[in-house]
Amino acid sequence: MNRRIFCKSAALSYFLLPFLSSKLFANTKGSGIFLGELIINGKKTNSQSIELGDAIVQSGAKQAVLKANDDVFLIRPFSKIKIIANQLAEIVEGSLHGVFGKREEELLIKTPSGTLGIRGTAIYFEIDTQKQSSSLCNCFGHTVVYGKNGKLLKSLKNTKENMHSAVTITNENVITATKFKHDVVAKEFLKK
Image 1 (cartoon, rainbow, N blue to C red):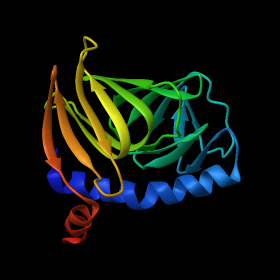
Image 2 (image 1 turned 90 degrees about the horizontal axis):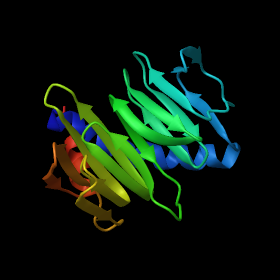
Image 3 (image 1 turned 135 degrees about the horizontal axis):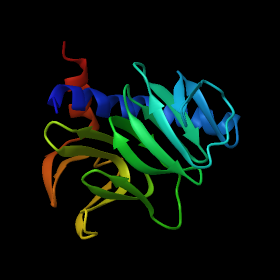
């Protein structure tokens, strides 16, 4: 993955998603699309009020913002996710930014390279099919990375003072790409 694009995406998730999530949570209950258009179970929609239930959600050439209960996702172009019981269950292809509401039990999200455990956090996740790897930025909160066999690979915890842990996940390995704070990401984002 191109480091510059990754840094821009991480900065966008820090600035945009917390703002969007507070606006979206304040205005509605349930699920809906608040920016763009998505294909849900094979049908295009841009409805601000939808019942997801169990669904395959795909984006086209443009990104979209989807709210599913207490979670908000900026779904990047040409991405595909699976929703089960109104919760993100799998990232099939592409990438997304996600802000997850706090939960008592860990939400397990399947990916091609393993499983993510979420309790309430903000992340950016991208699948690189050419390199057969995935990149994860734990922007804030706590995310756990499990391998395909269920083995704990990495636990990422970030606070306002220590934001953004970025890792690359390949097979049964997690490679720490970098540890950076918001100001470093913002400087990279503003270049060119």
